[in-house]
Length: 98
Image (cartoon, rainbow, N blue to C red):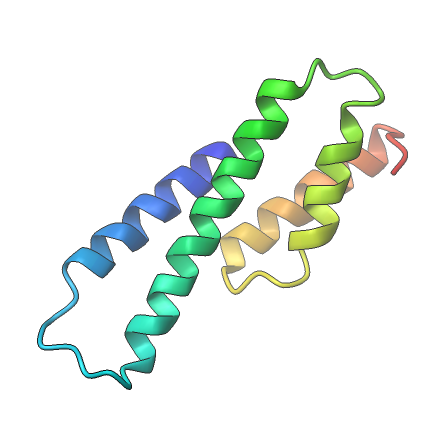
């Protein structure tokens, strides 16, 4: 997850930086791009926080469940949705309770 969000945020940041100018105030495409970049950065930071706070004990799985449940159904990125779906399935298979 960390690698995915890091790569996605870098790619979206580069896309925002190279966006053609001049930019119209009503440019919805740029607004959407910035929103996607901000979401990827926010999720990257959440994954980093969970990773640094986690010792993989039972209690440490709660933030992972919370992250997956919050983001897996509202992602506009098919790769991200697939990663979150697989992470959720692995948690269920491991018997990790929410």
